[in-house]
Length: 398
Ligand code: SF4
Figure 1 (cartoon, rainbow, N blue to C red):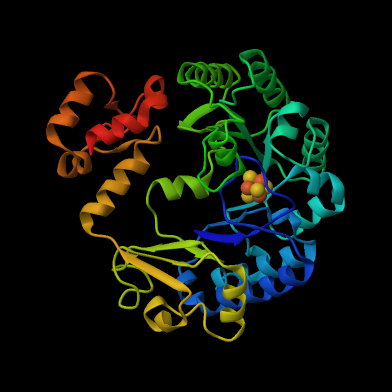
Figure 2: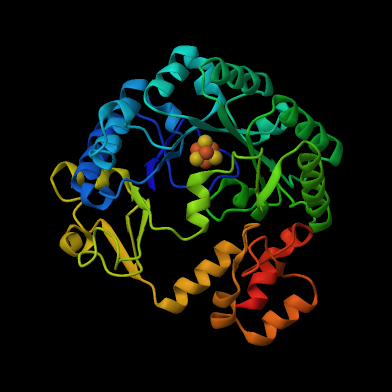
């Protein structure tokens, strides 16, 4: 699986703590060249033909179509080189987009994305209430989101995911209910819904510090999460991960692989890669259980890549100063697998839990019904009714 990071946005959202910069045409152009250089110089890592490509950010849709084409063809050329051109496509190619970009650029842009091989769009809708959207400092209105959704549909891209946020103190249950109704009425294949969190680097964090925002209480968040689970289940969505719901057959392949701890290759500043070593094409080059990432600095990244210093394997590029690495112990890997697996309805292997979890904590969780057999009987999972408190369940187990 390949992740490509686009660290540019049109503006900064109130709640966001991600690293990104306001899009600048000149910098973005050089960034795309740097990205393609990194992809091509790490193509050995992609030799096994990963089946998913995810372009995320930031806001990838701030890029013009020509830049998306350049990136998609660099990724396709590196990962799918052995496949005849006519069949060269990723099983799932997700592109993150914001509604104002799709609505502003119009159908030609969406059709152009489809021509690049994009077959899934993940759109940051967040709310269908204009007051909430303004508070979030989003650049779109509810109407723009619906227009963008229609444009994507008309372009022939059939797999659409939308993001929503709940647990905002000024959003009462009626407003959340209305947002869910509007989301379900569009009938996207996939819905991701996140509880608002206070990210340390965000504007919201400083609003909390200065008393301009008070967090929603836990009972409110819990109630809105329960509404979410109930409404989406009634509408036919499968709750397959704490924050993710899909119509049957439309679970996100890319993210599901991530939750299964499958190795991945990330490109761009801040993007992480994970190698399990041993049986991969890179055995002997990358260490087992090694995670590495480019530092989150666009300018350093560009100048390093364009001067031939990025994209080499970490051991070889230690002196460029832009790649950082960590090697996980088998215990750390198992704990990550438990933490990721228990986020999903697939769960995690009982044997993994028994080997690495605290024995008494595990028994207590099973007794209390916080862990139950999954559809594969050799796996244990957290039942949906306890997803909301999964963090504390997982913390007790490990
Ligand atoms: S939420 Fe998305 S669009 Fe908003 S600032 Fe963060 S990365 Fe950019």
